[in-house]
Length: 183
Length: 268
Image 1 (cartoon, one colour):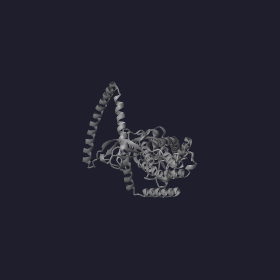
Image 2 (tube, chains in turn blue, orange):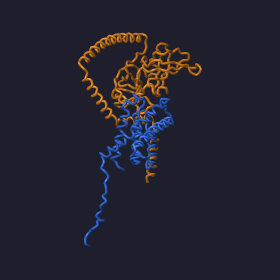
Image 3 (cartoon, chains in turn purple, cyan):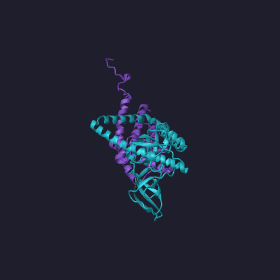
Image 4 (cartoon, chains in turn orange, blue):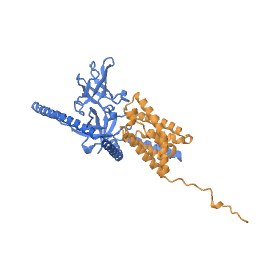
């Protein structure tokens, strides 16, 4: 496991959750707050190992629930399920293309809130939902789709800055040196 | 190997979530506050940055504008002082009459100003976090106000921060009275208020009530959490339900919670 990538992703997740709680502009202008966790989970699912994905889903979900009236831990499962599903199929995803990242971010940002709402209702809570929630879901989906490629670029850049580049093996091997000469 | 790892991770996460969801309410709230403490330095930093920006913008205001503002504030101060004196006289008279009648004295409320530092990360709850807590004497269920009227009540209290459930959240119900007609009811959340934060339902009204748009709604003091007489909002429309069995009204809240920056917490 590349622990530097894991730590960097966790730090970005922590700051992103804080920004989601502290920045009120999207809620004021669009009537809904964009969820930053699904795009981050998409990044982890297609670029990192299961351990990093698990840590981001668990810590991100707990941090988000802490700053919300959600029961503690309810956001973790939808994030982790989605991340695991993407991780299983990541070899067939065009993960390096921006539009593929957008589509994945859109799908994740729609599925995670729906999963969380389903769990909330199952747990006996009564969240505030109505026809207006469709608009909120749309804002979250589009916001998530826009954020996903940004997180991909940001995290890749941070990883490049703070980690060692992978060792490159030279094609030259001393035991296969061809000695030329008269004999 | 990878698939086995995925299964192990899935099992561990499922166990963790189940363990967290079955925690007793009080333990879960304490755990939430403890984890939320991680964000305190960031909230402090954001508050300082906001303060600096505010001071910076004030430094750019012209002297003339400031002098005009000072004169305006002095005038307002004189008016308010006169009103306070009248209020004090009325309060003393009220207390004396209560003593004569042998009624219980009403305890006076202290007001603590607070700043909104965060909002709920989920779109289906209406809660905010404020920068006062146990250290400042805040307790669960303390009423929270803005200059325009009632905002909500404190639900969870940490050492330096508190969580406020706003009116319009399913977990905040307020007993109210319509000032013009004297009809009493309960303010509760409405699904129509998902996008319009200021819209709530007024339920538990008597049938054949004669509510009209524009009539004002105040807290009734019933329920024991909110003191009587705090402005809540105004009636938008009223309808009878289930063939006239009961009535419901829509109320537009006096406070726009989406633009809330500063609030006051009432403390006994």
